[in-house]
Image (cartoon, rainbow, N blue to C red; front, side, top):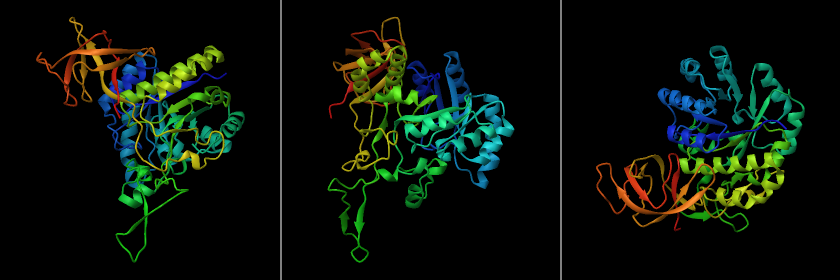
Length: 409
């Protein structure tokens, strides 16, 4: 069996550290330009340097996205960007555009080049083409089945790697190459500015009756006709590995630390359990499913892995996430008094029952006994996002533990 990598997204330094601590083998991030998540916080040069150093200290790789479909006016800036990345030395660059690939290969040939899913990688000849150009890895198009991926594996060089998405949001467009956002708002999804127009609610308007909206029905289920369920392959780790996939990729470079920790920890344990024994993996399946349901999601599908998508892969009545747990913060340190320092993310109160989520898979229900601000003043609640707080809990948390509370919705 090929060695498998768990690849986790990160939007900022806090999330990168979380991904590393909660089980990632590799993390992928975006810089301030040339990636496909312009609305993500992303990394400046200093953050990249710090993040790569932290990851490497823990034996984790870092890949940087440069996967826009470039226009002429992008190319000069791209040259300068690749020169910066040459100094920073990430473990790999994720690229879609052949011109960007040529620039990266010329400027920083010592860095691995990975071909993004945006490049529509659907057959073994495409993989072999990129291998001949010097690519180390190709990310499979999301439209591929496991049977097709297995055939690709059998027809490409042994040392070429296959990376495939196994969890997260699905785009309604082919390999993520969408034009709806650009048409509706002028924001180009292929330059990282997608407005997620596929999640909007649509109606029919007859041209002579402006202002009269008629609902779009699809078998009486509603009007969110482009709104896909989220991909989840936690129940199919054996099938993914049998297909010869080298890197199991989680979608979500705009997600919170709680989402990243939940998904990374769950897939890490599932992979490790299966590699130890299939019986252990099967026995723990309910735990994986229960835990993966604690992060935000839109209902789950297996996408195209077992055949063409059908009407059951869409959500027709809503475009909102299911959100069972609320992120309170991540423990930065504990002091000599036993107080945990956090930068608070959502409101909670003294007396609340919350959960300590640990990297090793344990969840500990505990009670908030006291809340103090940085000046040592006691307060009954934590209503202000980003406020630095010190908490006294019934159970002592540790650095990198995540605090969350079950949603009342």
